[in-house]
Length: 314
Image 1 (cartoon, rainbow, N blue to C red):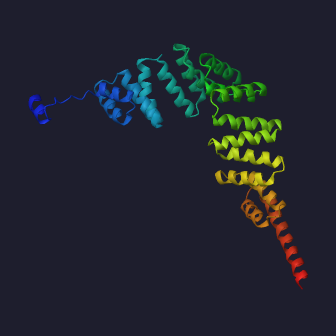
Image 2 (cartoon, rainbow, N blue to C red):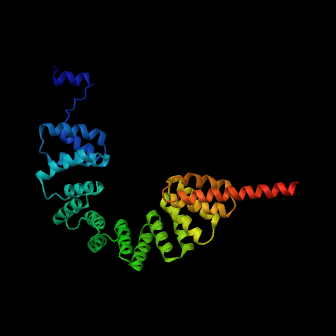
Image 3 (cartoon, rainbow, N blue to C red):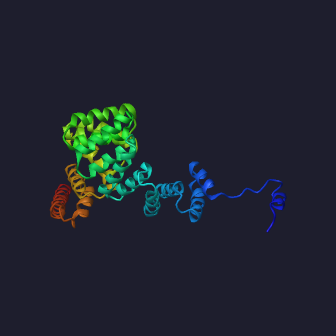
């Protein structure tokens, strides 16, 4: 084995630096170099399996990567060493919430808050867990606490607005959404939710304004497109409804929207396009019979038109 002196000469006069898995791994983790950090920390844990900082860091890396099973494994090992650690409990709560286990998630968030009552994100996540558990009043308290700790907590205000809607407190929901806009004027979910509220209130023109802004900001899902189509439909703007409904169906097959789109196309005498959509619905359990009737109706109508044209030309 070469001596350190010979290694230094071969390295151009620079002393060879010894690898320190734990220290180097933690430094790389703090620098955001997870690909470099992970193998070092795993190596460090082979020699010192009860190193809390390494267990937490590895758990966080796997959490960030979306590798839930591995994240839970290392975070539970960390929890055995420090059961009251707020960050570990919070991360385990997040993982449980992501897996749909709101009951377990709430317990972890409550444990995190028992140690750190000013943990704003834990209050927000706890409120989200309570929403999943259909406990709106508890959710409201959690979001209110988060807002008390951080007046700029956009997510807390947005979540609070959603709960207020669930308990039929529309005025408070709109107030919270207004405050979110003041803090973060380009927060897409706000515009979608405001569109939903305005649609529910029957203000379809304002709903369209809000929904179009949500689409501009990138919130371009089937739900937003459907709601935009329905708002245009209610106002009698059939071309606007067609455009939105087509966009909705391009993102997700929704038979009720396809049937309404076909009806509008038929009303506008765009028979070929209407037939295409009715044909797709023929085997649908809810709309199949109506679609078949519509196809027969259009076929007869087209036949009558052809007969009339033939008579005029003779």
